[in-house]
Length: 164
Image (cartoon, rainbow, N blue to C red; front, side):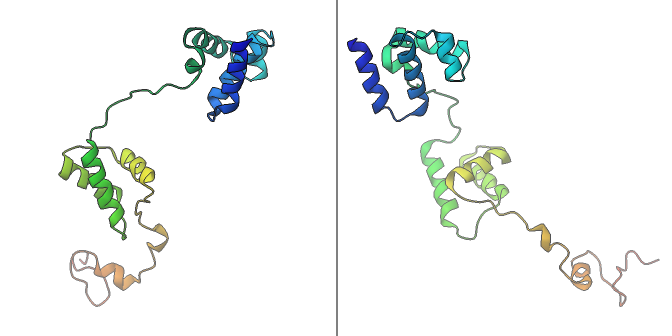
């Protein structure tokens, strides 16, 4: 009975929703006598999920119901390099393209990330990548567009290279 009271107090003090859901499962099964299959149906979970968390509670108690940190893959950049790159990106108010950030990381830290990962890092830092605005693509006049092409234009605006 004391263990049930401790579990209920932990439930009310817990802020993590996933851990609260697991504690609710254990309280329903242990205190209220509901079967594990009935409790997992009420929580819209599978029987495997319920048995996993009931076993973890039996082994580790209330701490077993909390999400444990996972090690994951170690970062390629060490913390100092990471902070240095982040500062440079945040200081520049004009913005960065993904390729610019990728090239900066490659030149400074000798680490190559995919463009997709650079997008993730920039989003994590709260920086939006500069992307060319395609709606302005055809706004330039014919004369301006032709002036950017290679070769000299004649009086008709046609390139001399393409003239017969």
